[in-house]
Image (cartoon, rainbow, N blue to C red):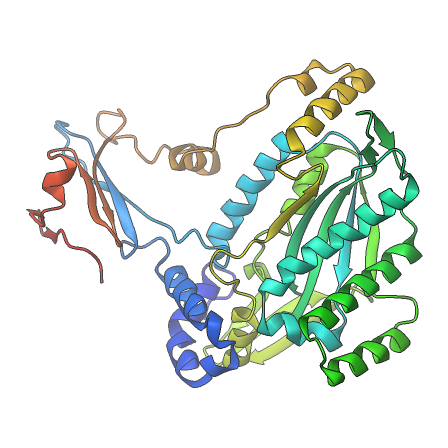
Amino acid sequence: MSTKKSGVIKNILKDHFDGFWKLHSTLFPQQYRKDIEETVQKAIKCGTADLGYSRYECLGCEGNPKPIFVCFTCKSRFCHKCGKKYTDDWSDKQQEMIFNVPHRHMVFTVPKELRNIFFQDRKKLNELSKKVSEVFQFYYRRKSKKRDLQVGIITVIHTFGRDLKFNPHIHALVTEGAIDNKNEWVSSDFIPYEYLRKSWQKVLLDSTKEWFPNNQAVLKLINKLYQRYPKGFYVNAEQKMRDAKGAAKYIGRYLARPAVAEYRIDKYDGKTVSFWYEDHTTKKRVDEVLPVYKFLFNLLQHISPKHFRMVGRFGLYSRRSYQKAKNILDLYSFMRTKQLSWLLERKKKKKTYRQRMIEAFDNDPFECPHCHRQMDLVEIWHADYGFLYHYMEDMECIRTGRKYGNVQKQRAG
């Protein structure tokens, strides 16, 4: 089978998901099985007429060109194509809203002894995001109680490592500085590494104790973890972002990135999947060959439950504080750089399908090949809601179940 073409993940799902799911769905927590199955089925149908489509025609054109069908996508973070678009859109949005001050990118890890807790209950990862914010908020409160310093924090939840194993951790983007109770910006030095490790260990183990009260086995494990990790849990805090644009792009890479990029899959022969990754420690390439069902398990275990919040915003980035902090920091950036753009609104509109296709392929998908004018939207059909639009009829008439051409207007099962 071809290994370098895009769509290899989709082919693996088409070939083996049904068989894998019948045999091994019980490996996943029961409360998430329905969400996983729905997500995979949508990813398989992504970009096909099964999910719905918009139809374009050049009405009245003497050349009688063929209609253009734009099939709907699944819009899932699990899907490689949709996840990429989701990440790009999110990064663009962050560049508008992120504060133009230095940020630090940090990664808060979970020791292997506790990871199964979050495999069984993903919602606890959202609680972990709050605990990460508490690490920073407590540090700044302790630094100056009188000034009541407030820091800005954005967290992104990740569940996989480069080897596809379940490895939950929290990416945090933190302002290197805070706003005090006089609405002044106070720059801050790097937070001590020892404090980060030990405070993260404490809030994580305190949370574990709260989740499992009076559980003697858990209490025994917590005591062992304090002994096993005397320096605290691992925190990577080396990456500094000096400008807002770079910070938004960097953290955006971690938002909806699939567990394995398709370019890292070297071979799929129907029975096994060969892929590679770079080892964090040695910086060397590691090649792995997995049976296809094992590969599928590793892939599917990272699908988030429906409505799961991947991103958390705390402190200056919270809804309650954001607008006031933005006004203060935009003025601060203007005084520092004399760039008027930081005082102006910088909103970008989302790119349309047509704009993205023109940028990517230098080709207008809706241009009539005969008269060269833009084609007309004539019909919209959605798998869940049936026909939503037809240029010949109003909405009420379309929903009655009448036929247009050879397509029956009906609600999808």
